[in-house]
Amino acid sequence: MSERLEIAGRALERSLCNHCLGRLFATVSRGLSNVQRGTIVRFASDCGAPLAAPNDCTVCRGLFSEVQKFAEMAMSASAPYEHANFLVGTKIDPEVSEAEEQFWVDIGARETESIKSELNREIGKVVEATIGKPAEFAKPDIVLLIDTMFDRVVVDVAPVFVYGRYRKHSRGIPQTHWPCRECRGKGCPRCAGKGVMYETSVQGLIGPVVMRHAGGDEEAFHGMGREDIDALMLGNGRPFVVEVSRPRKRSLDYKAIEREINDSAGGTVDVAEMRRSSRAEVRGIKNADYPKTYRVRVRFQADFDHRKLNDIVRVLDEKPISQLTPHRVAHRRANLERTRIIHRVEIESAEALEAVLVIKAASGTYIKELVHGDDGRTKPSVAEIVGVPCDVVELDVIRIGDKEA
Image 1 (cartoon, rainbow, N blue to C red):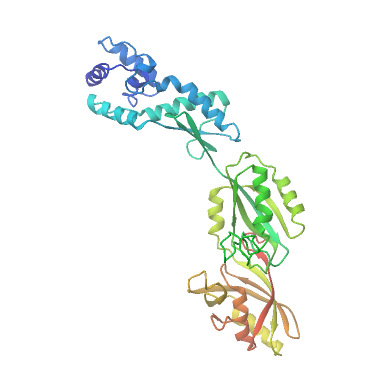
Image 2 (image 1 turned 180 degrees about the vertical axis):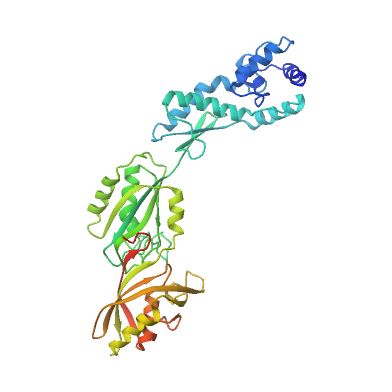
């Protein structure tokens, strides 16, 4: 106790407000504000030092007299954004923070709290009491960073995440925006000045609608894998999450969003099961490793014995295959050898030179190459087993394995 009184005596040789005096002993007891601590310390000290006027405090230089003003600035800046909780932060003049730390060293104070920490809390308390919403330290909807030197507020708004499943009923549409390879989105003769390889995409039909409902600035599309441009996505649909930055609305009518997407897409794409999501779910979707089921229409280049189709089932069912990176994606992926399991093969139909196969395969399997062999880069392949070169006429994804029912 005597040591603390000595520290208080040395501190009170300066002009201090009770905030700054109490903060020297911030960790001594719980349940008290720093103003209350400062009042107690000042009363217990026998030096008779008067309470400094707010602007005469040599440590905070009057910052705590502006708490109400800073709180009103924060609330005004946050008004355009719907939020269930918030977090206040402050930017303090570095000279003030440095002078405070030197002051602690000079008087030997070790049970302290910084100006920044107390100011954040005091402003937050005013905001919380005024708007009736709690402060949130882990994952706030909105962060209000108050620059106390220049009286301005920077608003950091947490993104909104919306989950759904899409089905794609039209070939020739990529999943996400595809910038022109020639101009990288700037516009050139190859892309007719549009900056993209394809005029529309699954993302283009879904993302802007979600963004408009959320009142955001930008959107990003996260899919659980992707199908080829010329493949349909049918069955139970592919999971996705749309991430909207700086949303002004967080309480969304997901059924209304579904209806608008489905109506505006004109049958090209439809969505279902839309709901609130999270960044954690995005990570789960991006790292998912579920099997997928495909329907493949195969055309052989010459007559063949249809009994050999049974060999496809025998050789591939629950067997591993080896795939080198396909020629068609070698320009953007490393040339690696991958082993994948083919879980099931069914011969759905066969007539003349064509057959329809249903293939359930591990995530990451190149199905087209499994069929035609890719000049021997996939082994075994349908073409190798039958002994006749073949091509994929149509490819449809009919089930994603995260949801079998």
